[in-house]
Image (cartoon, rainbow, N blue to C red; front, side, top):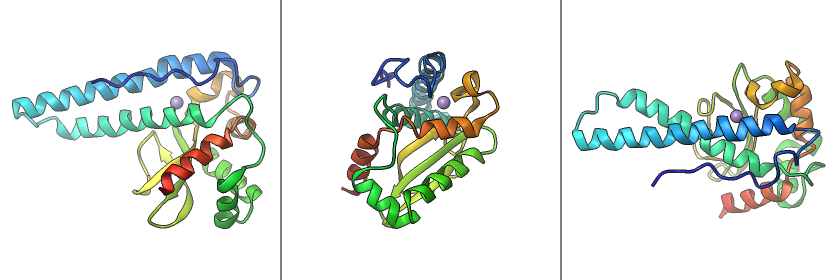
Length: 198
Ligand code: MN3
């Protein structure tokens, strides 16, 4: 049972002018698909290793699983975190929790964009709920999988790999992370927050 690339929940041009159509096509159809394929290939190779009893490649395969599995998971969240009618300040329960854990929405936004802008090379800015700690946290991911806090559930994720913004924003990552706040679907973030607390 292989994993498949989920369709975008809106048209490729739905996030214009903040995220351009060509970037969305390449990002979803080529890059995300690559992680889905990589995840399936890695799981097949792991199954073959168990069948044959030859576990010599398990270090590399484990790294591949972390990379492609996290790539597939984060991109799936990323598409759903955005929408054509999004943007504006946080709403609902997540807004209250943001105020509690970060002081204000503006302080959260400044913290989240700084963490995202300062990712060295390819990675993500991530707002997550840590159920055991009872707290929202902002973390970075290097690539897709390095530097997590184990136990955290991603609620709002921002891809800052160059493939996510370079066609439109070139080297101006801060302009892209600022534009992201015009397309955030807070209903989706709230649904994820509710599920993560259950
Ligand atoms: Mn990406």
